[in-house]
Amino acid sequence: MFDHPQDPVHLLDSLIAFVDEWQGIRPWYGVSEEKLQAVTLPQPLARLYGALGNMPGADGRPFPFWHQDYLLPFELTRNEQGRLLFALENQGCWSALTEPTGDDPPVWIIAEPDEPVLEHPSLANFLVTLCLQELTLGAPCLYSQDGIKTTLEQAGFRVNPLWLNGLYPCLDQLLETQFYLVDHHALVYQDNWIGFSSSEAAEPFATLLTEANRMHPPQTGNLAEYLAQPNANPIVKRIHFERLAREFQQQADSLQAKADECRLAAEQALQQGSTTQPDTETDT
View 1 (cartoon, rainbow, N blue to C red):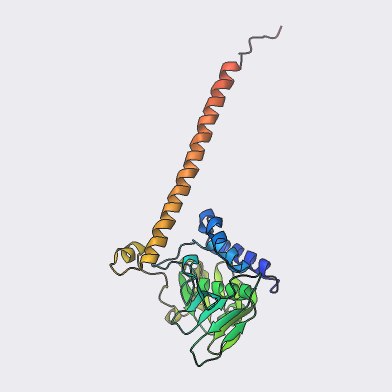
View 2: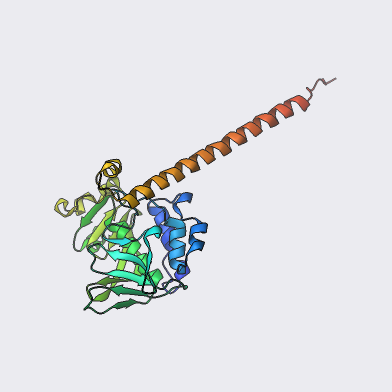
């Protein structure tokens, strides 16, 4: 997984497989092929949106990759000066644009008008790094603790390298970025962030973690309460209710198919019973 950093197809396949392991992917999380074909998209973004473009966020967020920085949902991407805007820094410090087509085009990181534009060499690399960052920092249980990787190793935990070749913007440069996986349920980001897939997953690490370093859970609040607010984002509302409609329709279709199978099985059993003659022969 993530073993061929120069292969954009492999990187996106690895990312989608990891998200499936970390949170689970349902068939209706992908943007429809009809929508994807209606616009131009570079292949890494088309692959990502096709698998995860409708994946639900939490706490009123329209997308799961929407915590520290923002990967824009498919519907919010837009063209700017001939390039495709697809990601933003959480305080507006930079925006990320790429070519509208291509197998793995570069990414241009645009900050303040008087600051230089950073050029990232690979859209696939950028997407993997951004999404793993957001999965870590948006985890249900998150700690900020310097030296956590070393602490885990000294305590005997196996810290498996996950993604070692990331490049990500920080101030006026691209920083090398690494992620590690521990016990299948803990993501370590660099050497100072650790996110757990659940509070229960953090329990075996309790003696190594300082409660003062636990961040406020990023996924707080109630989505229904957020949507009921007068100032709730209408795009978030639309995405939420469209997603619910798809899920209910998927459930209805699945139940209808099972009902049809049961009716067919009942008819076949009835036909079999009417054509089978009882065995009246006896041994002599």
